[in-house]
Length: 449
View 1 (cartoon, helix red, strand yellow):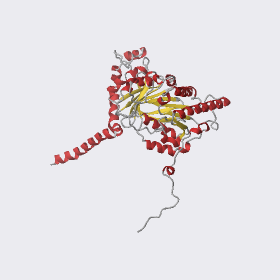
View 2 (view 1 turned 135 degrees about the vertical axis):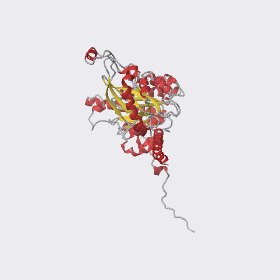
View 3 (view 1 turned 120 degrees about the vertical axis):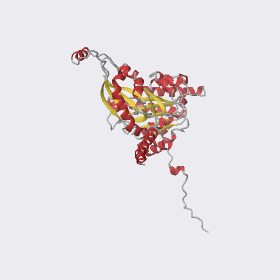
View 4 (view 1 turned 30 degrees about the horizontal axis):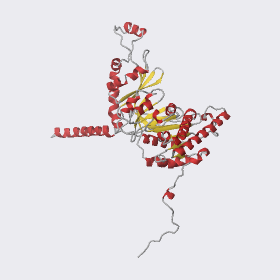
């Protein structure tokens, strides 16, 4: 009986702890990783580091001085190869970061090529290699699939035109920094998460003192709900043509201002004369290229020309482009590839054909095309983000409903600047009282028996 009691007292807590860990692994992976995964990963890393580096080809022969000291002072005949020196190991709620000092003869590309082998050797979800400074790299390991349930980091990047939009697969935030990457192209098929990406972007921009300008030629079905925070909105190709002309005129006026103050861009101007930044959001760029007859070709050519001009020159005037579409290629018409060349940032969700992935990422990160075609349809919001440096990473935007995004735009409607050049295209905002109908002037009296 005593043995049964002891077994009950010991086994019940162990079973409860095991069940709790199993539940945490499935429902709260951050908690499971912090309690179990991180200690195990640190021990595995410390024990197998030198052997792993050796078998992965990340060691170099020691210098002559080191070999001489080992043979004569340590009295050892065999001299071991030298792996990268571990400078710092940090754990986090999503993974582990290791800073390495590369020995002479190794470069960051060697570590990047071996990242998949390191992932399997240490039993982590992914290993991303980032060069922090010359001679140093950082291994960013994730212990679980952080893109399965997206939770943005608490730390928000700082900057006048810097907004977090999505979560990278290494646990860091994917950030749109318009001063570094002024223009971007976002592609994705239906139900791929492209609209969710744009929705998160609008919500983050709505909190900043910027002017948001929308072009949604689908009669505004996507962007009309953000009207309280939009300084201008075009919902037809004719309106889009006029709005683009107005933006080009605004750009030229800003160039005159820069010339008067002998400034290189808007951010060099004093704050009291600095114009507000403008972000142009084009929901479906193909609608600007498609025409139904020859009478529309002149308008199409003019719109494409104005977009290319904005892409080439508008950065200095703090006018930034966010071009979105399902399909983008040279078959859209004249000027498509010229416009694409001006869009530095690229985000490609699941697409219907490989040609769209090639147009989005093939010219800057050819390796990322295969990652795009491998995105499953049951994971909306997952995308591949690349830049002109050739780097790329998987990202996923957090889930955000259209009602929540609309409420944020209403909340920050007071930040909407009024630009005289865009005043004819300012959307009309209907209040709740107006939408509910006229208010009766006479209060009705309830009937009584």
